[in-house]
Every structure is written in C-alpha cells, then in structure tokens.
Image 1 (tube, rainbow, N blue to C red):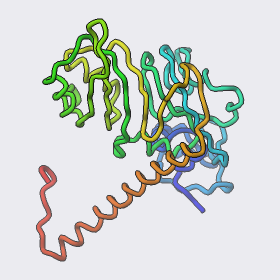
Image 2 (image 1 turned 45 degrees about the vertical axis):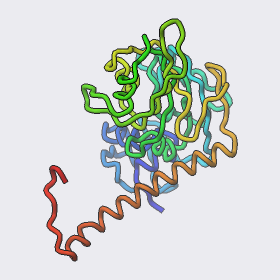
Image 3 (image 1 turned 45 degrees about the horizontal axis):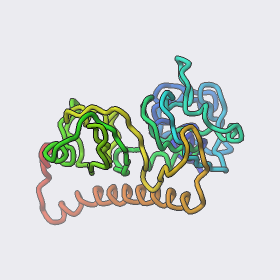
Length: 274
C-alpha cells in the first residue's frame, strides 16, 4: 500500500510529519535517487528507496516513547550545528538504534517534560497547534501579579504576533517577593510563556514544563529519562487518535457545508468576517 512521503518519513522516525514536510520542501529527501519536494508524493514501503540527506530510511516496527526531564543548558534538537549540548546527549545508549527525536520544543534554559519518540504521527498530534493540546508550566516570575494581571493572562494578552489564546493561570506560592505561577496553555508559539509574563510586567526567572497532554513529569530527576508505562502509552495513543479523528470530522463537515448550503439556498459568505 502506498502512503504519502511525509507520512512515510514520520513512520520511519525521521521527524514529526510537519517537520518531515519541511525536510521535503528543502530538497533533502530523495525517492529512488530523485529529489522530491512534494510532501504528498506517494511511496510504497519495501518498493521505493527513500533517503534523507543520503541516508536510507524505512518505517520502523518498534515504537519507543521516553519522557526526559530536560535540564537547563540543552537545546531541543537532534543535532546542533554550533556544537551545543542537545537533549539527545541525555538518551541512554540502549535507545541509540531507534533514531528518536523530540516531540516539540523547550528553549535552552527551560526545564521539564519532553517526549522523545520515533512515532511521528503521535508527535504531530501532541505538538501541532491545530490540536490545542494542554501544556502545563510552573513559572517563577519577578514580583507577585495582582488580580487584574492574572485576569489579563487568563483572557488573552497582546503580543507582537497577536493575542494569546485563553489560558489557565494560578498562583502556586509566593517566596521572597516572587510568585510561582501554574500556567496551562493550548498553543505552541515560540517562547510563549516568557513573552506572556514579560508583557504582563512579571518577567520569568525560571520555567519548567510539568505536563503535556496525558503525560506528567512527576518526580523524574533532571537529566534522566524513563520509558512510558503501558497505561501511559495507551493514553498517549488514545489522545493522538482523538485529535486525528476530530480533524477528520471537521474536514468532513467543512466539505459537507457547501453542498448543504447549495441545497438550502444559503448564500456563500465572504471570506473575511465569515
């Protein structure tokens, strides 16, 4: 059975499907020796030879899911062109053959939960903005936000790239004049928590992610990894399936709307303001 090239790369543990599309667009993927730039190109596992930057890849049968407690000072990437320490340096040697990659990002100084996997489909479901998966952080901020500031953060705060989505924000504790906030967001903009708190007048002093979707960091020590338990994998895959199904239902509904409107004589709305 043939599948889309981007999906083939995701199943091969190269990257999430979104990142795989970027690799294809950059001309780094070849099919049977020919450079391909269309993510929708169909390939057959076992029939076509697919390479990424000259290295042959194929769908893996053994899926691996590791939680890493990322410490500060590590960049979230598989390879760093500037030679900085990466999160992959913390993966035990026993997992080297699985070609894991990080699902999503934490900036260099942010600590906490990071999923490492070779399952591109699930990585996409957890990290793509369209799925709005909850990400929970503990942020030590300068000063103590007042009620009005907390309300702004909860309702949406204006950043240079637009208004943030509504978030859950609560004060966990106050120590030495600074507050630790528990912040739950449902989008994945770059350095979002740091920019939100700075815009609210309370810069982040330390930031840690403690949960993402059904995954919880718990008491895992910094720099250590652990494989997901069977129940956690089941929850994780269930979350991925739910997001994919929701997307499929939305797409089907969107396709059905024009036909329904045509039958009922409803005028097509203008693009803006619809």
